[in-house]
Image (cartoon, rainbow, N blue to C red; front, side, top):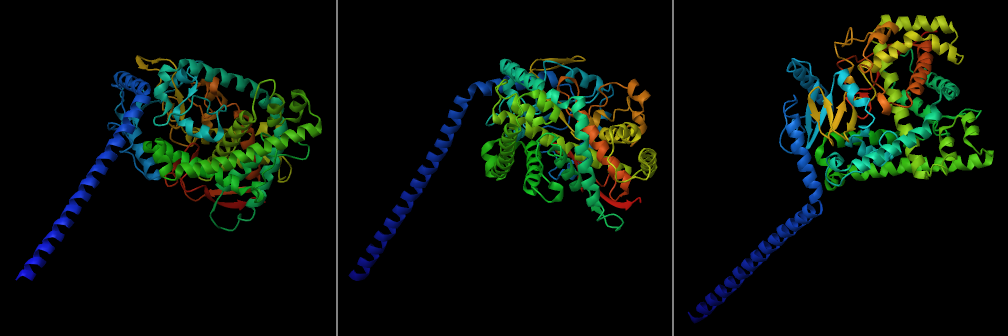
Length: 571
């Protein structure tokens, strides 16, 4: 009995000790958890203290925006998340949803005010649709600061003509800070004006003439490559061909050393530098996801998702390529003995003009890289999109394609090998109307944005300073008050007499006003040249017409399933 009693006491003592250890461990875990909560709380309090001014500015701006925009129509919005939770995740589904939203908003707008509010996360955005409202914004000489969505592209292409604005905040888009930063906006404006003044001569009409040979050479390479898929009956996506052609044009050179923007040659059409081409495509795709998902604006989430690290890696790849080109080009200038802009002007090389003005304008290599990369991006993706949609539409409208072929025969006859001259291109007026009509329905840049540096009054509505205001050409170009057949592909919208009678801001594929696209004549000339080659060689039949092939509103408009067509040789 005594032995059993001793065992019992020993067992109970062991049990009490184990229970005590468990309680001690539980208390320790609770204490650790409380310490973690307290630490997180301290971090948030410190952030709030450090960013108190910005938070107050944001609160003041948001309250003013709510007051001024209260009566405007817009989609469903939720606190903090805006309409982001309401929008479809899958991009094609999103295009159908946006189309439905716009139709509903138009139906609820009996006075056709055409001013719409959207909250993207905690950020208010106003969209202008009517040409008369678009004019007020785009012709302003003070409200010229690009909107916050251009912040992420600026981490790639820098603060060039496309993206020049203030720097990006850690947690919120910069627009909420701009209310208190008019002085910095003035600096941004002066820097942009200075840079624009330097670059404008490189797009002089006489220089554009010399680019035509590059257009013709690369256009011929593209149509030669398409020979392999013509008359096979197979469907083929021609978008990659157009992208590579446009990229080689913007980087092209020919034997007389008359280069375009970069003054080098990628040879992407024949398999060279595919890594660079792929990087550009992936960067634009990542940026689109960033714009659509407000939670990615927080840097910890941005990098935790893996997108931030991938974006940075690809940006470094493209930057290193551009800086290498700048260094090589500087050596070439020294070897050739080019000493001033006058000599470079005759050579017609964009990058040479910048290098020769580097010292006088205090430009760093990074400043030059910003402008070069800006034109690399703007100059190839946008023109490839425009050419692709033109071919895609003409493949759906055989009567217009027949007219294009007849016009080309009247200019070139049966000659499918000679390069088009400037005189040839001037005669291709119907082809130009077809390009413009494709740009009307499918503008290469689907959204234009500004952050207001001062209040803007539009028909009794006060848009407060700091607000991001967007113009959607894809909607403005379909305004039934200004277009005979707003939802149809109808090239005769651009007959001279109809163009002259139309509101000047009813068609803004290249933006308008002081920040219009400096390279728009370059783009149209390139598109006419390449498409003149294409339609001299081929007839085209579109495989997936609208609405099956959806326009995807990335930074540059692109088709959801590519430009799938069947090609047929004409000779």
